[in-house]
Figure 1: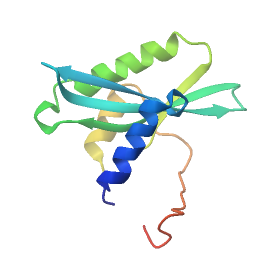
Figure 2: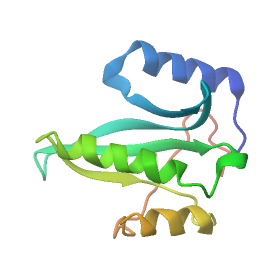
Figure 3: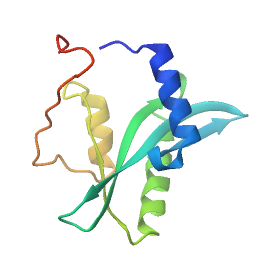
Amino acid sequence: MSLEEGVALKGVETVLSSSDRGFYLIVEDNERMIGQCLITREWSDWRNGYFWWVQSVYVYKDWRGKGIFSSIFEKIGSMARERIDIVGLRLYVDRENASAREVYQRLGMKESRYVMYDMDLLDPESD
């Protein structure tokens, strides 16, 4: 899967202009972004509350392994715990991304019993 820069830029701009779409958490060093993630929400009728989805996680290569994402994730957890309408945190990760999976498990996340399916409506031939 490749990232289409123009599409991604419009997606980011949409989030930044519509708080109901989600919000970004950003870590900076000397006013330079070094890590970020997007939080979106999903309503659960079973739980009568929202799950926050941790998405678009990225830490610049020079900063990986230095606790940047851990600090972002700690902030997400503390923000979620302050709200009574947030019932849990979720994320998805490429099953081949062993290093990310290890980080998420170390931070207390557990592999879900759910299997994710998707259908690309823009490119039905894609994997």
